[in-house]
Length: 358
Image 1 (cartoon, rainbow, N blue to C red):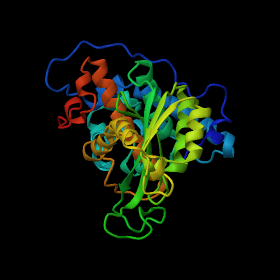
Image 2 (image 1 turned 30 degrees about the vertical axis):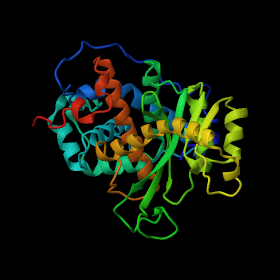
Image 3 (image 1 turned 180 degrees about the vertical axis):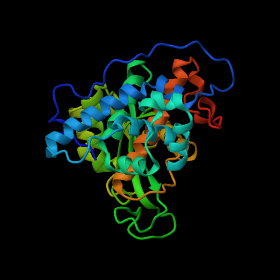
């Protein structure tokens, strides 16, 4: 999981991706944009973003561990593997179908950086994707956020904190956990995705993944700190539910961010009931209703973008998958805005050519 300490050892200003073309395309008036995988990679500047993500990740890895390079030179670049994974999650394909698609569609293979139509084998793709680790996927996600920030779609002024469980099907996963101390009705086996959302765009800014039993509150300050460090967002208000209510967080928001907060108030806890009045509660509930934005975001991420159920195991795989799902959500929004169809920004089914031609 990325953290501020690790990021601080990189060269000066490493988290700013290179400038890319974000010009607006002629509008398409059809009900669906019907974007192919090759067009999706081009519209989202995936090649430049993936190259930057891999470069920064390699720099970080060398500084953390300074590994010795062994074995023959790899024929396929890590950025090509990353772009294949991006398309795999966007079209919700399996490993075999993903490789077959790139083999039978030379234009998509060319855009993804495969020279002379030579596409990685299924076994190599699976192995190379596993060995990439977390960093390239996480930085690729950051690159997508940067593009939407530059287009002034993500503002980072009014943000929402929340988490959702990520159900996994493999109960032998030693790094997963039950969302409650023991399996009972309503408990989920898997991981938890802690998310910082831009309220105005309804798009994710940052995320961290933990086992499902991890409490929400300790992840709030790292998420907010990373948002400011990575993007320089002028956060003005932070919204969250009662799981985040702590005086440490409130103090951080007021004294470090110099921002306001609307964090739910659990009246069942001792001492809080005496502080609440009816006008106070009405005012508080009015502002908290905007938190439905992030609840809708989680519902769409799971139902339409494939955040769960997860058919893999391990925390690294959970991080990879979440980064890819969120990158696809950002990529769909970016594509919709570049084609002057902002009303489609949250619709994967109406932006992408889901039923791909043979």
